[in-house]
Length: 477
Image 1 (tube, rainbow, N blue to C red):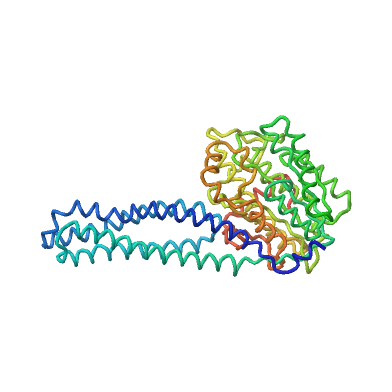
Image 2: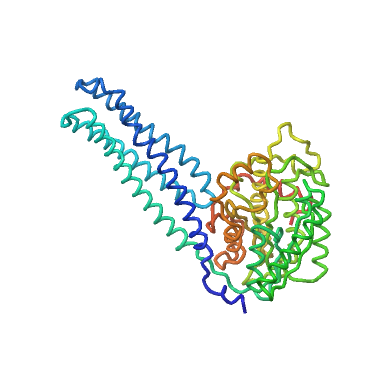
């Protein structure tokens, strides 16, 4: 069978390593050259300014030299701080925070070390030079090589950490899934498409829930377009996986009535449900309310999926066993860190804010996913009779059609740094890990980035988690 090749260790992450490393090296070399000039020439130019003081060997000059050294180091450190700030926000989608902190501290240490060494050694040997030009030449060369040394050390430190992080931690085991059933929302494109394809290769019966309510925001012909895309995706997967058991439904995830109808239709078929992947979503779209009066980011990204999960929870519970729990996988985002919860947006009475930000709305919806996941997991654990786990994750910064309806400047940002995004197939890796890895059996309420669990302290926000949970207007468990 085609799926047998997935029954042993499958290096899904190293394929990401190969493509991402080439992009990372390009990025590193480009900024290395740019900041090398800033670093190597900031000292000499400032030193030229202080040249009249060089012939004074009094304490004031020594004090000036000391202040100048600190200022030079600070200037270099400031440039690199700007660089690493941008670097951190882009690549924090791929790495752990501890890894970045370690790398930044080590690299900063060598920047300071090389800076002081350059200045004080040149100051020590100043009298041995016959002219200022020869001294300046020595200063430039020494600064460059001291910088090169610190750069090489930092690069090899990064490379070793990178290899360890991806090859020794994130090797994913995907066991066969014959006879099991999964639902994947947004499974006709992007991350969801590759998740669906892999599940089919593993032998699962997969049901794609395509979301009609998302693309219809800006396109009057979206319904027919969605149907066509869904059919094409199913044909594409069946062509690659001839024995795939695959079907599709069109559901408006922003409409509670539409979600109820799909859940009722699915239950009437008496099928089991072992995995529910809540992947569909919208990002950075203009302000608009759903048919239920809910802001679209909240309605689609959170409420529609959360309602679907609650409605299918009895089926998931019956399908799970004491040895193999059913799983709910909620795709969130690292942008939850800048999200703020406004509970009025979770009701139909919520008025349009005076200053609407699609970026804030998106971040809020992703934070709501994590908080709702936490609350549901807490209740399932307390009930002790449910054989269902629920976890959330961040798949990475992925180049998918999720950006297609985003408003400015998101499309511009995608053009500028899009080459550093993960591909949809690479973004699917963490989703597959949370959905299938035996390591996460009976683990619930967690949040994962790059297949690594991240701790989020939500216990102090129980009232908000509860309010978000109850916003679906369903009775508590």
